[in-house]
Length: 211
Image (cartoon, rainbow, N blue to C red):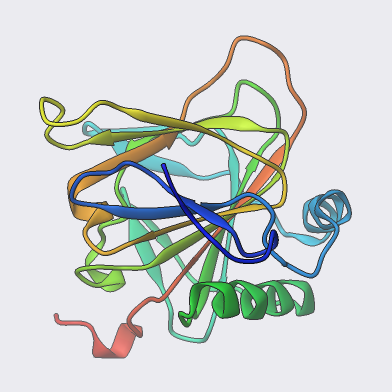
């Protein structure tokens, strides 16, 4: 991994993703204590249990979710349509910090609450049309460290990349990453505590999308 130099709060490592672009910040200056932020978000978020369509079947997601954003930033994936809940003061402050680090603007955030080792995220790409052709996705991790897995769509070309996401860390995916790579968070056998992940995005307003 290539390390970008700077202060310890801005250092990042570039993940080895041929055709993609992702940087991992282990200790970014987010302006919050990670443990306090974790418990604040668990307590103040209106978590939802949703089902998605996978391989033609509707199945419950193995985690809880919430979608916040600007008005009109509806998000649809796997047969699930999410209408944005207004930003909270906490989420707005965190968004501004993440935007400054990434030098990118975000109008929406998807929160995932992994309650224990049995909750997970299957392999997928964030390649929905409303995200654009080459989206920037900024992912903040809080709570229990879990292994994040990335696999090339052409699996014969590159080996999977695995990284443990520390509490308070930031992973930024840009460019052709979503077109060339998939990512996920597998279940684990050993019991663990809760984890909250926030992925900040920019979504095309509903009114401006092609019909």
